[in-house]
Amino acid sequence: MTTSVTTPATAPATSTTAPPALRQQLPLLLVMFFWGTAFTISKPLVGEAPHAVVAALRFGGGAILLLPVLLRRPATAAGPVPATGRAGRRPAVIAAACGVLGVFAYNALFYWSLSLAPAVDGSIIVPVLSPVLTTLLVVGLRWEKVTRMRSAGLALGVTGAALYLLAAGGAAGGQRLLGDLGFVAAAASWAAYTVMGRRVLTGIEPVRATAWAMLAGSALLLLWSAPELAETDFTALSGGFWLSVAYLVVGPTAVAYVLYYRGVRDVGSSRAAVMMFLVPVIGSACSMSLLGERIAPLQGLGAVVMLAGAALAAQLQPRLRSVAKTAASTRERTPSFSSMRATCSRAVRSVMPRR
Image 1 (tube, rainbow, N blue to C red):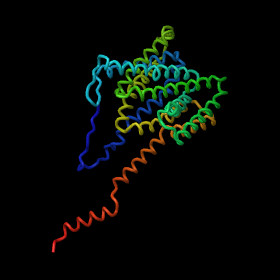
Image 2 (cartoon, helix red, strand yellow):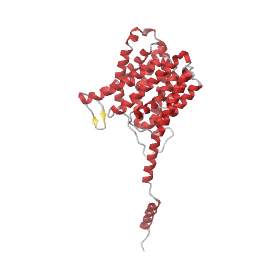
Image 3 (cartoon, rainbow, N blue to C red):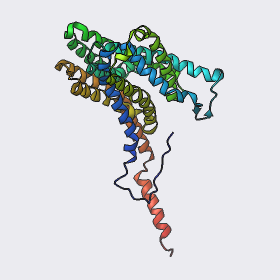
Image 4 (cartoon, helix red, strand yellow):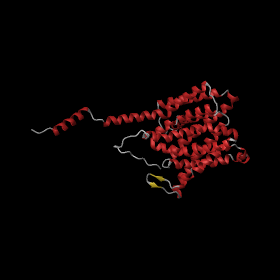
């Protein structure tokens, strides 16, 4: 855990010191880079080894790197909590159950889809459609209210996805469309994991819950990929393959999750969620520049419509409410002109000499 250092008011600012806000956002920017590049790095791997093997290697390695998180004693605002017994086991079981959706189902669908469709499709569909589907779930379950802003966002998100899938329908004999549908299913799985986590993972340290979820999900990925693992000749895989797997294990999987929750702690969940929209930008730019992938004009239009829908459904409305609350509280704290005049009059009378 890091501790913040406060600079005294008398100390002059230097040009070599980054602003505090920038220092707090740098870890999140690195996370978005890791997650955005994961699509591009993973695409060649599923051409060299079975997609199930790639998924198992990535998240199996990530779970091993996150084991120290599980070995240390968890802590809450009230202090350390027991790591054994029913009170200690229940959060782990709940988090592991969430890993079935957020790690196993999501990555099984994602890497299968990546073996059929371009990486640029996944980098656009998954991160942009996930907040739309998350909003659709919480509204459908009546956990949150339906607003005009959210309704417009959902409509735009669904319309954009339909346009994107329609343009992919005639590519590669329908194989690209099948992969894109798999990306939609992966986004739905991640949305369900997000919604489930909001309700059942309250009170559990986020990084610790993620580690339990990754441990359980990676175990299922290993079982799912067991036939392919047994048949794969690992000695025939290139050095570039193993370097890419190492990057995925360390960067987008282990380090990114730890930095993400640290960034949420430092800058807040609202700003962190807004920065998530950098993922499709980075992912599509890397896929087009490094892999030479392209999207049709109709797909580009669909991506823009989806992005607008995601912003309306998931981000804009809460931020507008936050701005409104801030303005209201500011009005309540701002003294009226008459009270300010009376205060000034009393101050002047107190310093004037008495006659």
